[in-house]
Image (cartoon, rainbow, N blue to C red):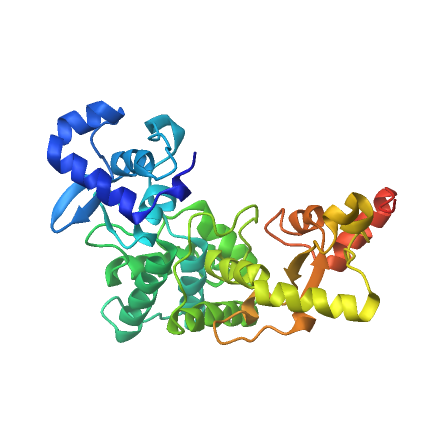
Length: 339
């Protein structure tokens, strides 16, 4: 049983039951408490988002059972994102969520354009950044209260970076002190390479302008979110999962070599599993993430054939391995990959 199976029609059925029997009986029937952070909003009415999602699982056509409260988590990254992906409005009634890596990349890029005197919170520049961040959060499925990523909050986050800036700390000046550990991590990864930072930030903005589709809950699957953030990681995964590209990459290998082998460990599913494994192999997108704006056209030379294990090893940590790096690790381990 999984939250990802829930459909819009199942949610509508749960909403109808909630309206018919009332909040108290509905929550008691399914074992949920009142919503504390997120509400599903339909025609101006507020519904407990997690309770509705859990009950909706019992309205699926395959005789599924409702999900209990302890079988799944609530919040922006789970229930709220799932319901938004089905076209529903979900509203946060608590504090605004922490800044994502994607947002911090855009904010740091903004700061480093003019660290000595960044535009003020009433400037058009900060207003534009606020709009971009709200577009980004709509894609990532995050929302907050009325002040969510408004100009004042955005300006304060930008000024948070001053506390890491040696040009200020060396003369005894400090920035705004409040901020998360992720702020420092993004500073350490990108501040010393503003050119790379600008390229990554531009790729995120271009994807937003291109109208990128919302990032679903399970989109990244086993993949560790890359340094460049969730949005570009999701675009990377979408290209890897494109059946058209996968078929073309396999056809190219078959035409050139007559077989499908992992480019990292040399494994063949046909040799390992016989005819049952014939034709199976995964595809890894090898281009840097900052080149993956929505307008980028994927070429076959951008792709590599890899087995399932190697693909997961490539994506296991935030700084992804290249196929060549993984091949060297395999060779150094001394483990035979042939049959």
